[in-house]
Length: 333
Image 1 (tube, rainbow, N blue to C red):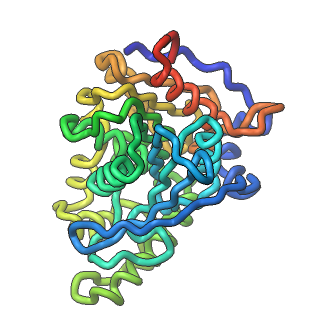
Image 2 (image 1 turned 30 degrees about the vertical axis):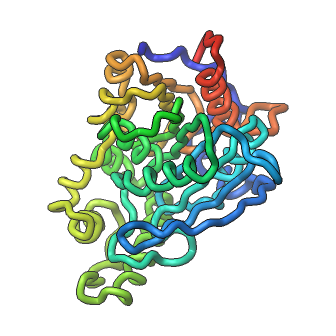
Image 3 (image 1 turned 90 degrees about the horizontal axis):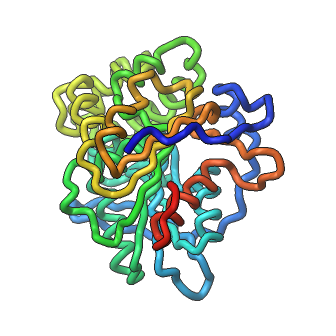
């Protein structure tokens, strides 16, 4: 599918800078009013996954379900997750916001944590949701790392995707992990890196108390970028040779050609986390199911609402795309 036209999204002037778009929602957005219902899923490997349900109506379920995946060091209660869930509820969807292992506030039981290439947990949550609610249609939404997981899930083994899944929308996705990691190493992104690394170091210290023979914390506090961390922890703990092998095998770009579900990939042109290689125009041109949209503004998971809009732009964009998928009279993505 050819690259979609540049959308008309034009936020007020202060938000026409990528870093402001990226930082503002975290610091200043009022948390959307939501009423999540928590559930713990026991996994086949003896661990658990915590999720939050957001129901379209209090005493009845919709026939449509969306599963939303958060970004690195995020969780189901982040403002961008709550905002998307709330808007989808208004549009008639039930929603599951999943927490990656170790991100729900209680550390998971096994040595494994989460990483950019995890797809088995998404499949577990999706199939559980479909089975428990009798849903006729389903969709997936992912932010940043969660978007990479979602794209990889759709493309690595299309045959296992439940037939109810009719669409997917992902935002701000580092489809090439190594390239994005190099951009994150720049001094202009040091503030974000410290935020991410502080949380990751904290998780490793917790795991070291649980599994002292598997987790060696020597040198951990000196790690300020992803590469040495992934080389020592993410890679070996999760079955990869090293960081390079992990980045290569888990980058979603290589799976885009296999996606068979209508999928919208939204990458803001001013995203401070993404290099040019993370705007996969050629892949979109070769796959009729992949729509690539590049707004001029938005930062990294920013997309602050335009004047007069109570919702953030990405929330309306996701609802519009999914509505197009369920509408028999399809006109435009």
